[in-house]
Length: 122
Image 1 (cartoon, helix red, strand yellow):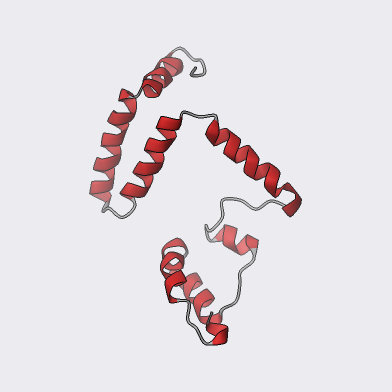
Image 2 (tube, rainbow, N blue to C red; image 1 turned 90 degrees about the horizontal axis):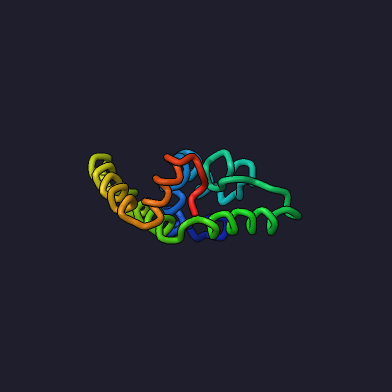
């Protein structure tokens, strides 16, 4: 990085889109790392756990996601990334259409039935 005479220009692309500009510039201009708590504060992490709990927590999250409907999670993931670069109006239009597509899925229909019947989806 900057400490050895090389500015982190390509990492700056992702960093500048992930954290407030002032935080990104401080990191890029000083080359100083930030703590896990600072990364959490600025939204670079979703949570911080002690190192000895890292694998257990990672597996818990992975198992939770894996237990859900694969088509629904895939649709949601694709839509999330597709709407990010769009202006607000286009993003809402895109995500509204995705909701229609989601309801057409077998798992979407089961989810609605389960909700109405006050039970978990099967």
